[in-house]
Length: 298
Image (cartoon, rainbow, N blue to C red):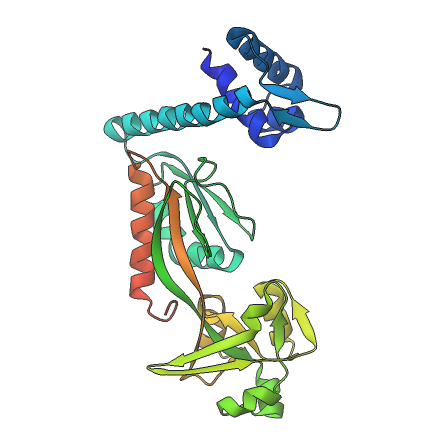
């Protein structure tokens, strides 16, 4: 069985599109079609059901996709093992994370890591979209998952620590000095998940839950921060996002003795028999950074 044909089939099966598979592989759509046709001829069976609007797998195609994905993973592991035995840390390392956590990595981890390991090419993907780690599309992810994907290794990093912040002008006009004041303060709400507008405040062993209200809702922390800086309200934002602004005095931390406990953060990578050294080294660098900065996580 031709492994190139098999790789093409895997991409087509996952993308459900010859056009997107061709773009992913950097080849022509005609070549993708010929690879799949040759594979079907070799196996003497139809693998894909094609219509003008969709591509679906046959029963044989579904069975082959499972095995082909395993073969692809074994090939990747073999390449990684040989590289680790014969070369310095080098090659591509694909990292995905939420926007603001990614920005914090760029500030605290990436410069030192690239200085120490210049032959590692970091490919960074920051945003809300959850990439397929188990399929090998990315090497490591930093994500908050309610339910983890299968075939991954997950390291629980802790709960992301948010803090309550506002502009100095808003603090002077609203004077939020104690927890009871939060009920009357105008908040900038998070529309990505309404549950995040019910704040769980923690301070040592003390706990307090408050549901906040406001007339503005946005779906990104970056937009929330912009509105806070414009004096539009108070917001719960990750400490690693606002650390610099608090240090410079450009934002005011409200109720600094209290933190907001949000969702848990996990470090996730695919389950492999051999974990590449560059991945292990990068993960250790992130964990050292977080371990040395107790203000980022709870």
